[in-house]
Amino acid sequence: APEAPRLEGRVLGAKVAVEAVLHRVALPLAAVEALEPGQVLALPGVTVASVRLEGPGGAPLGPARLGQLQPVLRGQLRG
Picture 1 (cartoon, rainbow, N blue to C red):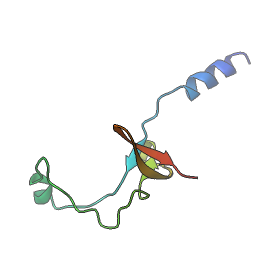
Picture 2 (cartoon, helix red, strand yellow; picture 1 turned 90 degrees about the vertical axis):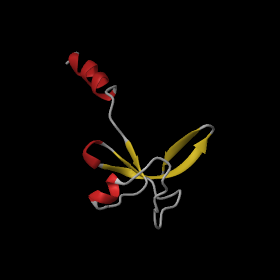
Picture 3 (tube, rainbow, N blue to C red; picture 1 turned 45 degrees about the vertical axis):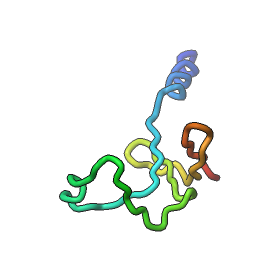
């Protein structure tokens, strides 16, 4: 059907949110409320290779590596 290629183009051109997750931590509400700008949080066991890329709903897309391409931090998907 001639409409199929157009539909495929629209679907493949759709924007999808992708999140780079470095670490997840559970904190008591009081600790979250006490957070202040500039405060440093401990991220035990986290390395530049600890990044995970997630799609909508937290769907895993794969591991990534944190890097920097001046002046922006970037995540590279690892295979």
